[in-house]
Image (cartoon, rainbow, N blue to C red):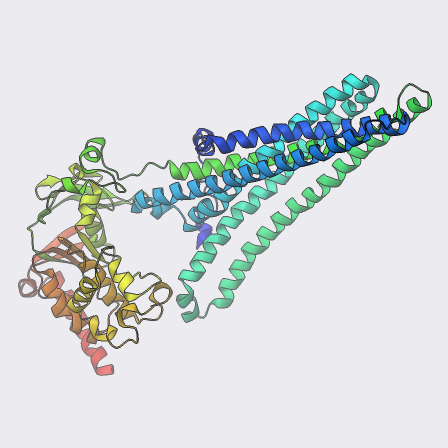
Length: 607
């Protein structure tokens, strides 16, 4: 389960995320300029408002002068309107930046995931990837937009208040200056504690995301094994750990606000006490005392905002490192600049430069090992002619899937060469090769939508006629025509409304609709019952003609017509030849076939 990844730290401290993030923020400079300008004007407005009130108290109450009352009211109304425009402007600009940053981060992350090879997904948990694309991108976009507002506004407001108070009355200003270090020290300590527990909670959240994903994908297995209660208990343990960390962070956050509030009002009370004495002594006007009290109250809101934003930016740093590390992940398998110049990229291919693929395949002294495993192939050599139907048989771990994955360039040889049409396939683009591949997996993967849409996934511009022809080729039309909406029938999530055999027939049609030059069948008939297997075997034989094909076979009955059978053991070819030739040798293949034939005979008798 997901716990095996628990201690892995996927943040990359060597990544410098902010240049890329800032570049995204300033993709549309006008929004950033409006945001910055609005925040500066908002800070000025917040500083101006108490000064207007001081003037009103001094002019209308203390001095009782009413000659410019109408002008002041108009000024006040205009100030309120301008204030509203400023607030509306920064809200609109901040929302635009938040949405754009989240969109671009998710877009680039998803794009990168399409480029990354199988090896990346071998060692990276799905929960971690999902958390980066969802929660990290969302948090980062919120902090960058609204956090920037709070920090800039808070800093400018604090600075402005201190300057005005020092100019107005140094004695009263010193009260705030004495409390300020206590506030900052307490804020820094509390934010570190809060951040510690939030980090722990986010880490557990990634585990929960992974557990959700495994729970959805493995729902049938869980139910068939009757382990719902155990799985629920495992999930509850993760949820409890998350709740514990989140509650501790929430508790310290709840403590933070009241303490700041108390310290703030100690400052307000001290200002009121000292200022009241000065008013009674005639050295301070009531309007000036109001100004100091108002500014003192306003001073502590920015302190809280800045301390919160500083903590948020620490979270943003971790999120930015992780998501930019994903975006800038360098694929193990990629085309060289020279190949890209000629053939284009995965997303912008230059198909006009693609050569026709004939189908000759050759392994020359190939060595291969997975990142976390031992050597699978050592000094492996194999030569296949175009149009040959090759079957790979052998026990699990013998190297069958490794060979086809190397042919497809899902992985690349550690050393040695793989030639396609007598040319190292690294000298041509990945897209060129994949454009000419058809791959049928052991476990069929369908998508929500109709039968037509799922078959056309293999060729996105396919017409209904092409889809029907592909389905007829594998005899899938026989069950499709019986459905109420035929090819427009919705098959549910992951094809849940179809049987396993029907789903596999659809995946066969999807692979064949693109008319691939190389066809890979990775134990593709293992999920099909004997009757369905017999139904499509002749169609497969027809489909394989004129194509180079590789069949990883569990059922040896499916490979009897293969042009070449390769018997694999421990990454080596120990026998090769046609079906009848291998039986005559009475070697490893003969033993496999005899054992399976006896098992099939027994199953037929039992059924």
